[in-house]
Length: 133
Image 1 (cartoon, rainbow, N blue to C red):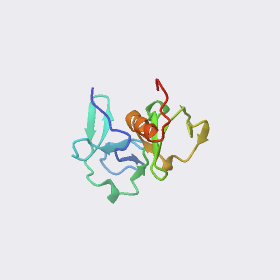
Image 2 (image 1 turned 135 degrees about the vertical axis):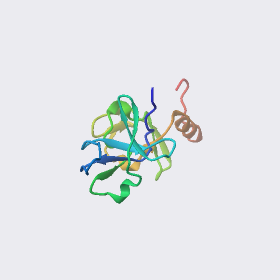
Image 3 (image 1 turned 90 degrees about the horizontal axis):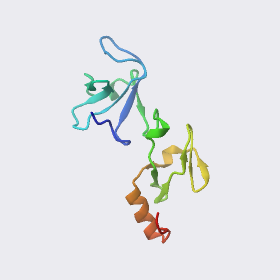
């Protein structure tokens, strides 16, 4: 099975076609793990696109934030808020929001994906780690 991108891998969405591009509007491309260029997933694995620098074609490719155009099932369990230097466990993801600390949040731009280890280390520094968590 071919591995797809992680949540912070740069991605773009095809918003307009160009001659002989072989893509469809709505396809999402991301930087290949080996840094060889832009690619996207197809049934048989990875397809490498011939455009090296999608930033040169803003009429064809729209940059995506890490949370955009993702299924709820693909969203992270833990988030970091870099501006506040805090870490959170997501209680529930919804289509246009998420719940942390019992509050609904809609400002995805304030958060980035994190890990359980970072979250637990943060709790240790704030003396909030509960037994068994």
